[in-house]
Amino acid sequence: MSIYYAGVDGGATKTTLILMNEEGTILAHCTGAGTNIYLCSSIAVFEVVVDLIYSALRIAGLPKNTKLSILALAMSGAEDQERNEKFVADFSASYPAITESVVVISDSYSALLTAFDENGIVLISGTGSSCRAIDFTGRLLGCGGWGHLIGDDGSAYWISTKAIRKVFAIEEGLELSSNNISCIKAKLLHHFQLSRKEQIFELLYDNFSKAKIASFCEVLAEASSENGDELILEIFAEAGKILGAHILAIVSAMHLENSQKLEVLIMGSVWKSFDLLKKGFFKLLFQ
Image 1: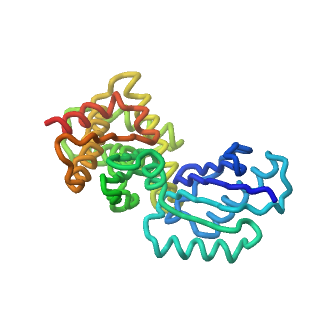
Image 2: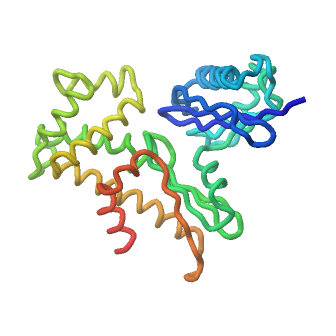
Image 3: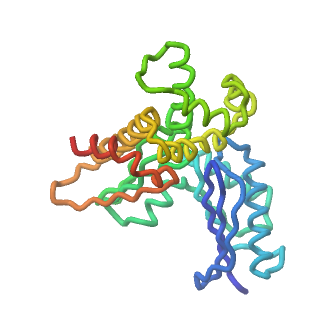
């Protein structure tokens, strides 16, 4: 009997599935909606994953009733082991014919364990942010990655909401700034198709979408490249400083010797704007 594996990378914005055979040959590659397990209900996450599995089987020319040997899920938000175990139990009970075995870990730890055997750091800044490390003893360490309410500092969501706050705070006189807010405000209204800034409240509160709010970060990056807006540059530099602080915090917990080599893997869409981040990032790391 043939053996098939599926690996899933589930983020807040999108979910990617790869189907492989026992030789490791990739048979199919599919992308679907975001599946952060704290932002989406378990049922919604299950549906996205199962739809991707069926799509992959169809692309690979395999019957829909083909049963996977292992379904490995690297999910955004999967930081709590007890919750992960419940996720696995509920999925297995709901879809017993899909796979023989299910494994769930966080996307950040998945990247870390793929890239390093020891002494490595993964710093993610995409829709959200997190930093994870493994030291020379194999001990796993973490910093940040606790979601948009108490974490995600330096992420696309953080940059976007920081810019939105600036629009309100500067216009209302709550924050004094020598920088002009007009560029950010114009981009805000255009990107979210608003006629006035207060309409953003619907997306922030009534119909909250972390991914949609985070999408404003790319618009800001493009605007900065176009006209070098000082306020946008300031926000990205602050994001870089915060991301650098994640590395310093986690390195302090690793108890490294001066001679030990340490590599950092950076991941996520925000790093595409490294030219905007580097001022704050390097300033903190090398001060």
